[in-house]
Amino acid sequence: MATENAEARDRHSKKETFVMGSHAVIASLPVAGADRAVLVEAANAAFERVIGRIEPANEELTRTLWDAECYIDNEITADMLPISRDEAAYLVDVFLVHHVVQLAVATDKEAAESWP
Image 1 (cartoon, rainbow, N blue to C red):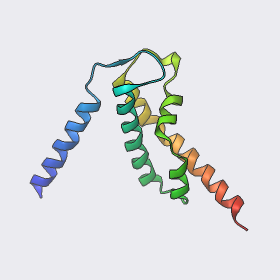
Image 2: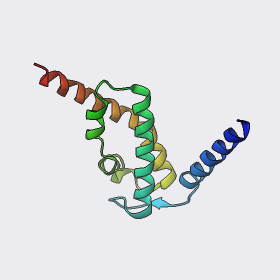
Image 3: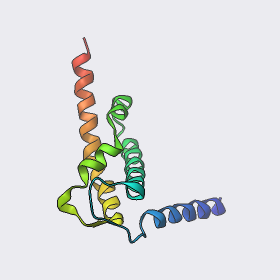
């Protein structure tokens, strides 16, 4: 069991190093290439964590509204540039909870309106 936990920590640590250890800088919009891939991956991972924590009443509907690429396009704005890829990934992760809560509220309203 201890070995499994150590291996899991090591894998997690290596993943964080990949995302949070580059010197890449995002200097123009739209975010593209490897920068976009890293940010979309960070957004999707954060989305799964948030969904697991808030347990929305209409999870499937909430998932249908989620669009990681659109979120990245709207969160990283020109006034933030230049920004390091690491900082952008951090901001995506930190502020996503509010966005997911808004999606969940919208789906709750949609479900309530469609209820006879």
